[in-house]
Image (cartoon, rainbow, N blue to C red; front, side):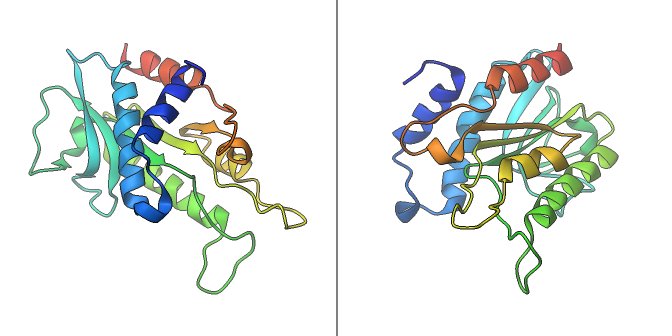
Length: 201
């Protein structure tokens, strides 16, 4: 397996032998978020900032549970996992297998666009609430695999990139190749590393 950062993250994730029938999605998400935050920490000047693994909540934005944040080093919790909005520097949403939604409106189901628009709205609300916020990040290990039986399958990668234009979006692996021979589509250092280095220098 390649020694690139993307494959390091994947290797660490697979060490847990995290498989769907032995763990729920929330646990798998927590494992990926934990690994990703450790790699994010490499780009954070710890004399000025601190990283916090979620779940976390932000004062004045309590309706949203965040997967990870970067805060000012001297920040204090309001109470466990709950922070003042003025202390937030960056916010992270992590996914293992991306988002899911239907292509056209169906009763009781959200479309892909609706799901991504909700993520966008959460980030937009954070930008309005957190006066010191420098960046919002959506990071997925891979995107959901398109249903190839459909004449025009949903391109989850393209849909996500097209809607989250104000958010730093990084989807590490191609979903079609993920299980057998994973292929990198978004380079961690080019997207996450460079962005954090620029924001936090």
